[in-house]
Amino acid sequence: MADDARRRGFELERRVFELDSKCSGLRMEKHDDYLQNASTILDKLKNYYRHGAESSSLPKLLQDYTQVQTVLGVELLECLYWRRGALLYMYCHTLHQRKQWIKKNKTTFLKYLQEGVRYLMRMLQVRNSVKLSDGVVFHDSTTASFLSEIFSDTHLLAMMYVGELCFWAVKYEDMDPEAPPERREERIHFRDVGTQVLHKYVLVCEGPLQGQGWSTDNAKEILSVLQ
Image (cartoon, rainbow, N blue to C red; front, side, top):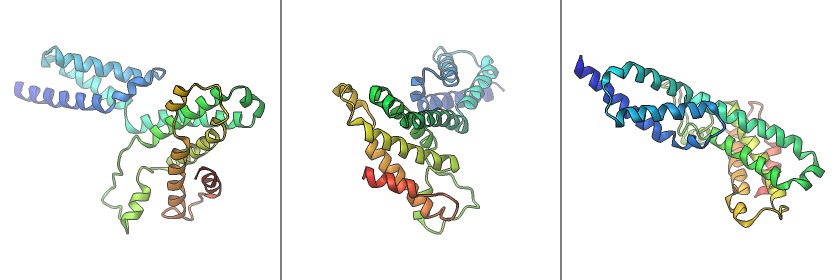
């Protein structure tokens, strides 16, 4: 029984530090209570092992670890990034129609655009690779490549949103003399990101997903400007 408890403790320790390594970047999300809660629990779990606590606390550790997994689950993490990115997209879409406001607040507008792109790109990158069930068969490797990182209609919509945000940014970033040089260097390369994401969007919608109701007209129009 004691050996089994130690074995489970070692396995849990391995998983805790593995999870902490994967999620180290999430600590920057200072304004998200869910992610900060998960970060706090991970720190407590790591401290437990560093101080050599007894395995009698294993049930509590298992409970905490399960809580972290729930908070940092793939679907929830995607949902958090999507929620923020989509809200910023809708807000920027509204601001984009207020030309006079943008003239007076270009720096602020570009900041919103950049944050929107960052959150949506994080949402698209949560799952690093395609995990297929045994029943899924592709006729060629090109199809599998096209569909990598696209797991739902929401992912496709996020790609279109990224393209539009980048288009607006390219349109206005050269008109922002207020931003200091160092701030410009920190910005996303909107033209490159928008081109890459929309190019994949068009390939997917006109390839494996052709006839599924996804239009590429707007994407192609934006690409003609970005490229």
